[in-house]
Image (spheres, rainbow, N blue to C red):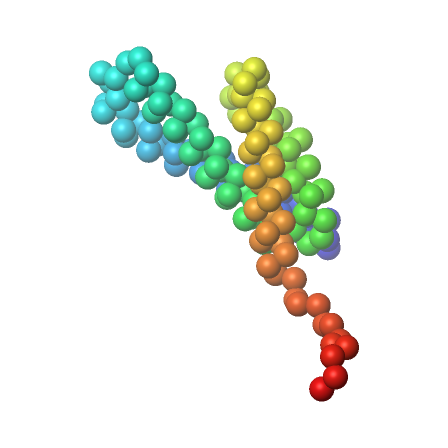
Length: 137
C-alpha cells in the first residue's frame, strides 16, 4: 500500500509541477504582446523574473503535493522526482527540455526548494509527540 501511495505522491508532484508550468506558459503567452517592443536590459529583467517565478511556483506546487501525499521518507520521494522530472521533460519535449549550462544551477535550487517545502508540509501533518514533563506539578 505504501508503494502505491509513494507512486501517487511522485506522480502528483510531477503533475502539479507540469500544471504550474503550463499555466505560467499560458500567462506569458497572453502577456507577450506587451513585451513585443521591449529589448535590451528590460527584456532581460522580464525573462529573469519569469524564470525565477516559474522555478519558485513549480517547486512550491511539487513540494506541497509530495509533502501531503508521501507516506514516509519525504527526501526519498524528492529524489524520485529529481530523477523522473528530466526524463519526463525529455519524453515530452525532447533534448531541449533537459537542463543545461546555467539551468542546472536553477534546477538544483528548485530541488532544494522542493525538499524544503516537502519537509515543512510533511512535518506539519505529523501528530505532536507525546512528551512527559519532568516538572513538578
